[in-house]
Length: 440
Image (cartoon, rainbow, N blue to C red; front, side):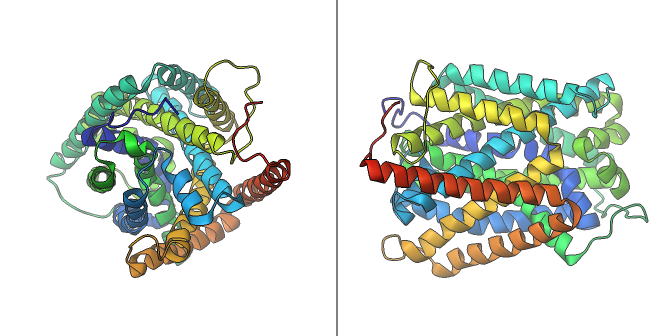
């Protein structure tokens, strides 16, 4: 485990990693999708998503104080459920939802970049650009930890400043008037189910805070700083999201936001700031997606390496040289590339939301029930997190069942296949008496 360097990440670096992953595809790709589900109330849905994330973050903060280890979520799940199928299954769901997020970011990068050339976003260029970005993220990640930390911190700051300039300029031009966007006969009807389902997508745009737990003991004074970094990342992201949603909703009608949902920010920049504004927004989107994907690839490969070292997931190095983390880096990027090519933005986001919420509920249940005597926590808050996640997940699945049955089927297939694969793999390991990782 020599790749882990204790105290190598400062508080600001951890916040940089957290916001780096959060404010990437989240706002650029999901804003239009959230508007489609929640109608004119979409700016306020981010507040509800922030509150739901606050309940959720409480469990991660408590677990990080009790077990500040690199590998974060994988380790928490093992503490909760033991070294068995449930822990391995939920850990893989977290890893998959992060890989799905990478393909979301990659496609967003392609979609926004094409706005500079007035190219058709339905063309193959979206996939080509997305795959190129993933390749770039892979090369950066091979270059090491110190570079990633300084790169993501600087870029996160640039991105947040850029987004605040975009929001500020958009709001100054309408004299900071707050009005909900106009809905019309062309906009989809909003139901109670679709409104609650929209919260699932905003939770997805906040879930980057979990990457902070994966850094564990690499963060200075982890018992204090992990919780601080999570809180700061969520607050910074919520403020940025709210200002952007406000700016977009005052510059575009609801029908326009939904119609141009894959690049709503670039579309909103045009009436407010002209073509220069579009260029500015697209450049920020490019910076945001690049930093988001680098931080995310780093976190996932780290997590998969830890699970491999704990003998919880199958591993084959396919003749590749180097450490396990280098191998898991390759797998991460290859899976993300396949998803980028196969699925569109809303399907990728839907699948990510479903897998993440299932994993999140398992984390809370483990703290609520399994660790109730080991870890001090307010059961009402943890119980509240389980309830909120469950309501949002059920509403989201019902909504998608009505509108896009394929993605519900694919998500269910991934859940069942992952669980069964882990069950057989761990049964085989136990029968062979192998508890530690054997590098085959």
